[in-house]
Image (cartoon, rainbow, N blue to C red):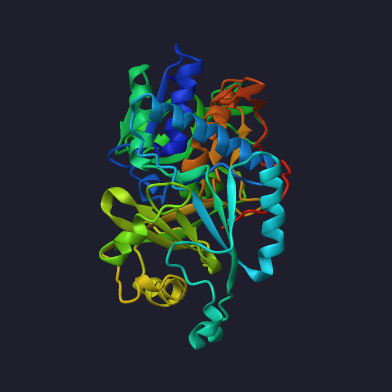
Length: 416
């Protein structure tokens, strides 16, 4: 019988398991994952960028404390592949007033951001002079906002860190085992087959898996895009839906190599560039390449083995990308992959909640799982341990129920 069983060995699951062992060293903890190793689901497919600048306090809190912890780990000598290259938002004229107001608020608060009316990197801002761009309805860029406390990280190294520390603390793992359902047992059994019945008080007893039943007093589902299916089957409806996301990799050869090394604000490498229409261009210095994707409004749905779509590159990304960054003209991806976001369709914030006695969920990170994994893991661990408060990195304290599914947060204004 395990005290805590965490389903999912991605960044959120491993952070949760690690913090449970940190806070309760004597507890017997097991992490179960269907993949053959740690972080082999959507964590490995993440674009893995981070920023700490947001307009809503919950985003700021989750991201800033998590990134602060990663920075501490990086500075201790454990290489997480962190590079503070920054985020560069290219702002259309229609959004200029809003973005300047946001920037003014951030600067007034002492936040390191910069506004650029002109930049020394090869980005075309007046696309309206191009006939195709006009037909596509692409807007001119009137200003660019550089967020300095932002950058990229290696998701595999991050999840490996949590895994190693968790195992060192005595945590157990079981890979290659698929969790199929949640097991419940009556608090006061009467010995009749089929228990618990609707009129009986019940609590979690463990999970059914492809390798047989596993008994646990508490089960935490950190299952990302799989959460909707698993919780629906258990009778708990959550506003979390999977949405396919894709990354295309283009080699930074020739002039693109110069762009890769065109850092702003004394940074060594180019920032992560956020183009209009939701397209991002992420530098990958180790591979000498760019990772490129788009936040497209595609249908929700889960794919067991998602594959990248060449049509999305040809018709959804390339035409826009090349109008704003002409250096990509004629370039084709040499690699690509696809995974899922687990989107909270209400407010796009994580859900960490107690659904029944002994049953918890930590999911719905909506594309920011890497960025916020440490804070989400600390909150999930505190909630599962029955603590009223969760202490985040740096000493900030929040209610353990701060991310419950019935909360209400302010709308984020600085979005991709």
